[in-house]
Image (cartoon, rainbow, N blue to C red; front, side, top):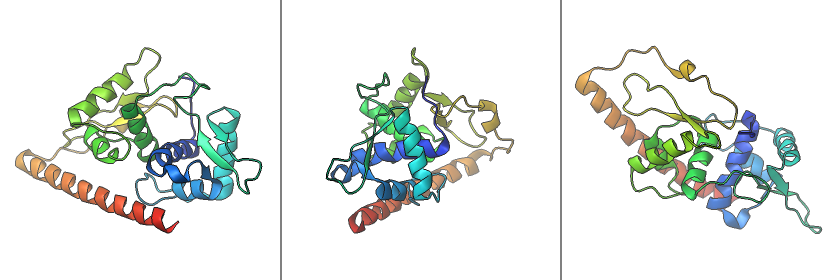
Length: 217
């Protein structure tokens, strides 16, 4: 795969893909809107504090590689940017709606489990259940043209392995294996259930906050 993104470039591409779907009326994005999207406190991991200059430099590099385009017209007061990352005539990367949703979430939030991805892609793509997410991830990990994601070693005490995108270069898979001892028996199940419930509540709160931010922009 020829695409290799820096952390800031990955955030920029992830934001452009996300806003293309979730706020189409405000897409393409101005530099100010793109910077605000990159620095959102919800649905981002890690949270960043990028300046307009940081984002502009990343955008300029992506434009040079034909991964982003400036769509501002002659009468526009501000440049507006859209991604050419996938599904365009300018590149070979073609993704289904589900693959695109997963890619977007991985670019914005780093390694995640299939269960987390199913919850977090609810505005980007539809999955009937976690097994369908797993099937799409396995397909993305075994593409003949080159893998897009990699499965990480399962963390002790966790039922699901996380997946990570490969758009920022090769991943040292073993570095993600932790030495923490697993929690035993029923305690493990109760903790996992609580973690899932808390995660779902956090996602709902994040969606509400994101909606408020969009309405007040």
